[in-house]
Length: 550
Image 1 (spheres, helix red, strand yellow):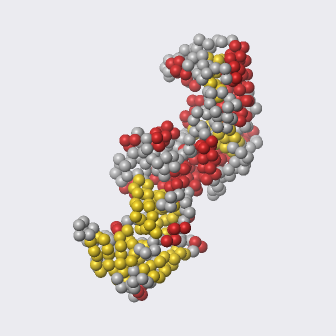
Image 2 (spheres, one colour; image 1 turned 180 degrees about the vertical axis):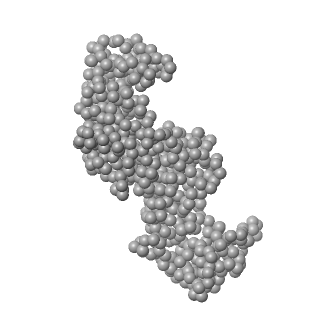
Image 3 (cartoon, helix red, strand yellow; image 1 turned 60 degrees about the horizontal axis):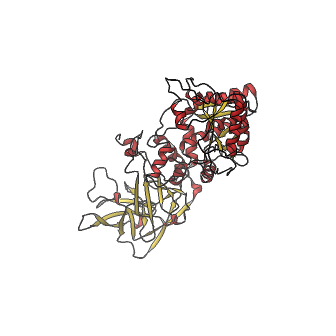
């Protein structure tokens, strides 16, 4: 089953217009595919492709398949495949039956390759990988033909069959297409179609010791599956002539149409698997699911809702123009979704003890707090209140700056949902001078937060009960790189993670499951992590918009 979350109006872009025109001319229904290689974890760039492929099919009554293009057993694993399936479902998409694999069609692909050999369109070569690179030529110089380019078809067919039987070691032979070593497109200079690789494949086991290259396998898998529109990113534009050459010379049951679109490039991060792997291997991040990573696993741990990611991909749109997208747009989509969906809670990140001196010692009462201020159906929860509370350290100033509207000596503030308190005095650490305790009186007629005499109290702050709040580890995540277009590790943001060990949260959060998201009032959005700590998903406002460049 294909699923695509409904939107008010289906987006319009050049690919959808092409598909609509093809349907009008030839009828039928479109078939697309989302074809990741199971050699790593999906990132936000894959989400754009996923939304496009599943979206085009879903909007037109078509079909989108999940297919693993698994042609390199040295880098692929079942772990990656299972993670990809999970991420596709998490983002909101589904597919009919079991996921497909390019390796499901290895027998048919071998047959097509053998047809090319017998027809004189492919030959078995003995050049090494390095020699093939050296003779390929450049953009301004033609390549040099292999000494084995004119090997007889019968001899090549026999060697190719022996390659399949495992008679030769890795690198002894390759199968190359015979196209044009002087072509202006380097991809047409006798590309490699098969190589020997004695390795156990995660899907086919040890059934094969020769494997098709990605370019050869992808087009044939598309054709065998009846794909009508092969949607891929712009780096495959130069590969399209090879895609079409293969279709023309093997004549499979269907002829897909390849259409390219610009890939997603997101500021303040990198989208290359190689560079992401470098961050993991060199210990700059805590694995592929680190919430600073642009992987879907990382975004999931950080608390990004799948609906926000889909919304982001739709806002970015589909074009052929390469560009970089501001991280602020993704964060805005996350804020918009969480503002609608995330329940509210109280959390104090940097606690400062507040003592209500005229409140009875040992006594407690509970105040009702809205779970969502704009959703009455979300209900309320109880906030325990006692003589000793914690407030945010930044919500008190012994010598208030101009414009400061929170707690200071002689000033009143409203404790959210509770009552009005007035600062009478404070204590400091003799060694450092830091404020350690704030002493207040409270207005017993202001329960619920309103003054009985109607006086105006300019400031409202959040709080938690010192006795009943739960300790929590809070991780404040920020952008991974400090510059929009990062180079190497030297551009990493040294402030991308701050760990607060002694935060306090209201007791209702003790039962929150991993993955649950909340707005900590006045602070930001946070997600419960698997270790029961809280990861900051996004701030309440875009602070980066006010930061100086670099």
